[in-house]
Length: 94
Image 1 (cartoon, rainbow, N blue to C red):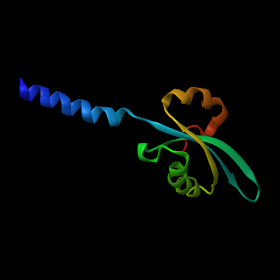
Image 2: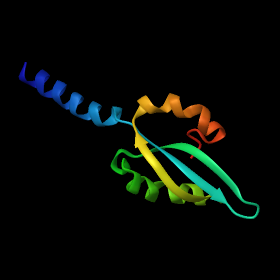
Image 3: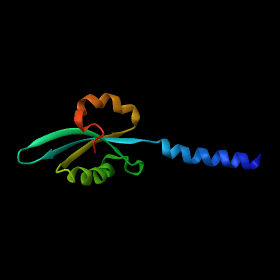
Image 4: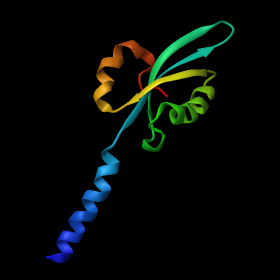
């Protein structure tokens, strides 16, 4: 019985962090010609603040020629649906 409880506690401990999700909405640009976009991207739980998300998103966007302007906010999965239409093609792209 003690072993079963220990196993159950371990499973719950590891299941909690895996279920957490963090997303950031951001603005980015490209120069010549100037293009702007608003997007939503998933970021790691460790970077679930606007300042930390900037460090994670900037290289992702740069690899495709975009410059991150700013991260507007970070949020959980409950905020995805309301931002989906606004992000359009940039919804969870980066």
